[in-house]
Length: 177
Image 1 (cartoon, rainbow, N blue to C red):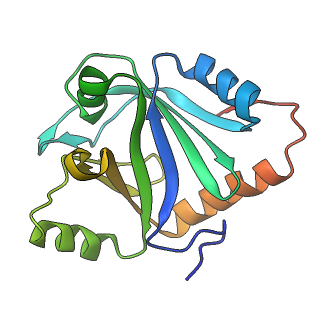
Image 2 (image 1 turned 180 degrees about the horizontal axis):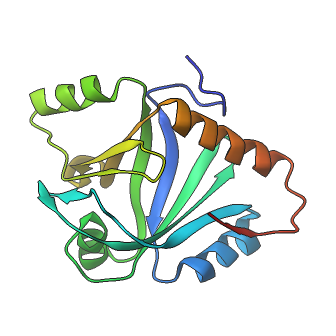
């Protein structure tokens, strides 16, 4: 099944990067690769995040834009609390962090990962109520995989962002949400 923004379900829909300065990074992506428009949220504090099963209140800014059918995500953590983001920054520096994979059956995907011995190291619920879970595949794949619950709200949000990228007149680079 293809999602409304063109990617098949249960496939990579997103490439994500941790950055030191999210607004500067947005401008670099636009200048170097014409990626935009960007939707920027933050700084905000997570309210339901779990890191290794324990609650964590991270201060984050997150930006999204589409390049073709693939979403680019930029993440800036504003504090130094332990997280999947600071783990990457400490071990390999800023740059690539994870692939985002869509899951219409999120619970089944997480259960199957548990059966493989791969428990999520980070879990959260987005502002629109979509659940996400990061699984550490750095040893075999060089990054995390974020499993994204592809519910009606998430698909509608991503489809709107994709359509906006197709018709973008370059007048507004950053849209704050």
